[in-house]
Image (cartoon, rainbow, N blue to C red; front, side, top):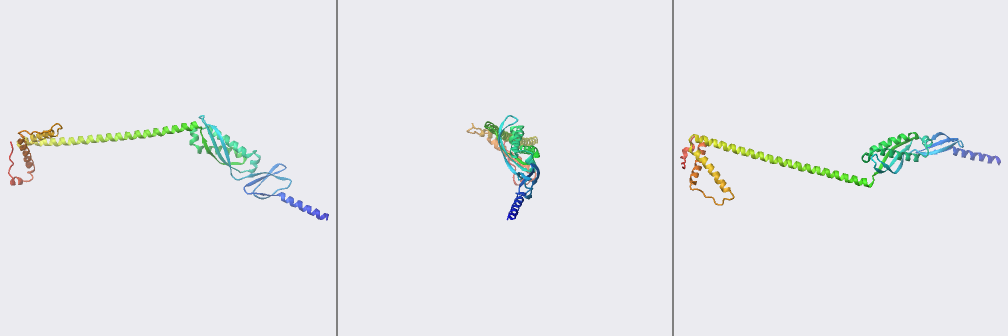
Length: 309
């Protein structure tokens, strides 16, 4: 009976020792093992065996990537502007032994290190740079913090600045500045439009004057040619040419009198019949000019037009 109890006790103790010596590690975690208080090895996910009473689990570390909220803090920029900044950081433990024994309270250390470097990096920049170069700030913070936590066996995968809040008076000042810039650009565009319109208008007036001058030049040339033809006809003794010249001037004067706003009644002089005869002389000149190509056909059909004197 006593031997049976002893065997039973031995079996229970053996089972307890086996249970104490077998450690199951979940996926995504690592356990550090200490023997008499000294680190010996790290248990990876799965089934692991340790020596009961000699080995014990020192710490259980999450090896998955984790997120850490960076609370809001005030930062003074290089141009003495006070801004409120918050962010978020992503990190992952790569070496469980270093993360356990190289630093105490890893999460608190990471948070304080990140907040300190945010003040350092952003404090070395102007306010305009903070608002316009957020990607550069994130990259610089990532490089600085990741290099600082490397001895702890931790990898910083990303740091993002979520919000940069300048004081209310700075926001109002920037809004007024932006409004002034927009109004300035609008005024410049409007002035440029007026300038182009005036240039086009001046070009149109200039072109119209050029065309009018060319028209007057052609008219003067035509009149000079006509005068030359009449002069040549007069030098040859053609009386109709003189009548044409006189009639043309007479008709021009009558046209000006008729177009005058003060002229209501137009009185023709008694000698108007001589003007009619001069007009008939114009017809004779035209027939003589075009009759050269007709080889005398027109003269055979019609007689000479009498000249009015």
